[in-house]
View 1 (spheres, rainbow, N blue to C red):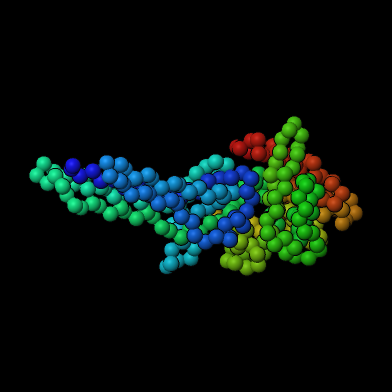
View 2: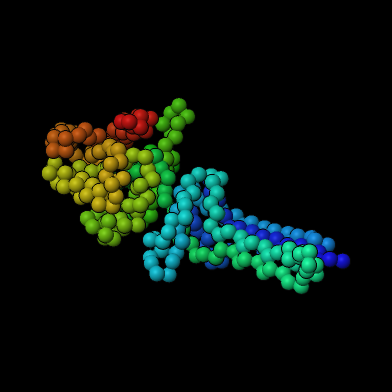
Length: 310
């Protein structure tokens, strides 16, 4: 009979897919290479080969995917996409095209060709994955401003808390119940210091996380002792946010004076009023230890989230 060699099957593709049950990229640390299935060869009697099976790799929502190139830093590689929600799917390596069997080369004058076509190799690339937190509220401030204590007060999160800077070495997430079956996700971002946007302290690793929060709560500790020192502390953090990106500079925020329990009521009230005067904006006085002002702070945050134009 005439030529009857079928075409080869296409190779499978590799996809990343958001999985709402995952919170870290740790599962990917134990395996360095992932491959989809190979396409199968075509057969006689004009039978086409079976396509290779696709491979789907689960990742947490908030994963940023870049191609890691040898001539640049991984974080500076081309952006392939972002996976922002459960079930969203991103192709990262396409399968190759199967080759043609000898029947594809038959003509009216060449009815028994002995040639066939090799398949085209699939895509192979090295990826750099970065997980950015997805939260409604981001807590920012200098180290030891009371962010972790506040998160522990308002949620079931259990961040490490101590009276020295840089207690928080990684972002912590907490879920806050605010009534009417509403929940807010709050992220405690490690403290920022001057020069964080250039890599000083721990800040450079976490400034990117704040980009994914809807609003910011900027905590300024009353331990500073004077309105002028509080304003300087506030400006230090705000300068780092602004120099990291315009998006952070323009993000809506609430300013809170933390650790109100450390001062007598009259002294604390006078300090907050003086700080408000220098800042030119309202300041919420709170104590995460006693709970004073925390409910009102969450109410303001919820109202700001409900009104995108605020």
